Length: 578
Image (cartoon, rainbow, N blue to C red):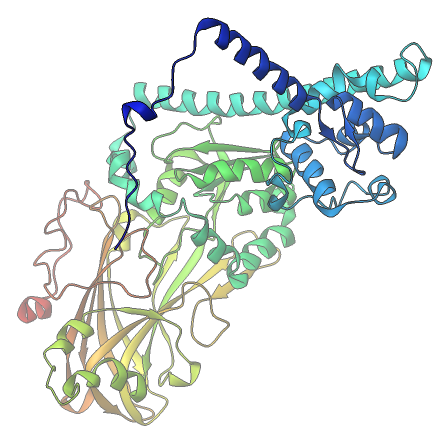
């Protein structure tokens, strides 16, 4: 049985209260003990106890030839660096010769482990390194206080403190300037409302876009994009190989993230780069730009492009990595078009300037068995009713190139310098030329990106399954029932997309409808997928709804373009299916 300790004391066990004289004696004794503790400072290199911190450091300088104050100055140590150095010396029993031979580039006490004290209540750790470099300097130096060497050391210390103070002041002024720009933009926007002809996205409140931007505040999504070599190196090659197009130009980076595209532009000769992002990652971008000494060329502004006012009237180039899965999903394109219509000069250009959306037929029985046929017999139970839910989900994954059974066909080309927001809702009739005699199990969608306008060196990349993979992967629409196709056969389809971008309702919704009357009387049930991505959740799938809207804007708070009086007609075949 567990024993419990009684914390209550009987009256006889209570200690007696002492009178005032005893208190005075105790206080005097305590102070004497405190004095005794304060004068016991262990040397860093031997077992000797010194009477004070200054005496200990003087002892280290004269007996062990290690001047701690000089090391603080030499390595520009702050409080944390000083603590790490003291704990490193105590824990490793470092020799004087080793310490005096260190280089500035690789200090051995960089690990956070050296923040843990080796000695409890170590007096050296309770000392301010700045005070050591100032007030105690003459006591720690071997030369006498009145000698020229001592005066020179004090002058050097004062100069070092002044330099560090100037650097800190410069950083503070930079941060203040950035805050002023942000405040100016907020004030000007409060006074000047934007014209609604720039798109309904400008009329969204910031809190309605919060989920979208918060997903880009975490470093993980930026790490994934930066590690996508196809994507990042294509942007880099476009700018570096066409530096004449950027020389002395003003560049706007919409959705700058970590600032990688802005830095590419600056290195390519841009006179000024304005980088805009609403997510919290922009604060890291400010540090990144400063670390790479590009703060004189790159100005970073936190906010939505629809809400801020740029410090210039017009820009020469707009760069942005706006593409989402299946190109249009995510639809940051509307913000790029807003910036284009408001800020781009007549002779300017948006990059990338051209994008293609392509579809192809897929024959992958094993994958279809795993995803669809699996439900017909689950441990001896019929769960076939689950197929409907699975088919209605567009899957984002990497396909093997050998699963393609048709030639790809381009269903839409988007010119970012000319397209209107309303044109992102489109219908496309297309045919797929079958290349293999097999079973068709899915339709795959992907996109290609081109840097073309005015480029001496044209650059492009693809997100298709035939080339190295990207973080966009491919978007796969599974068919509930595979059907047989023959090589040389053409499969005719109709493709319709309703883009509900951030300007209409959140989260973004892209409705994709595939109508597939095929040869030999085979008709596919239309695949109706509402691709909805919950921002901030990393997933390889878009959740889909089986229910189709009867008009493209059912349930939306706003239209994609409020100036279009007549909604695009819903195809008759879709009405019949609904």
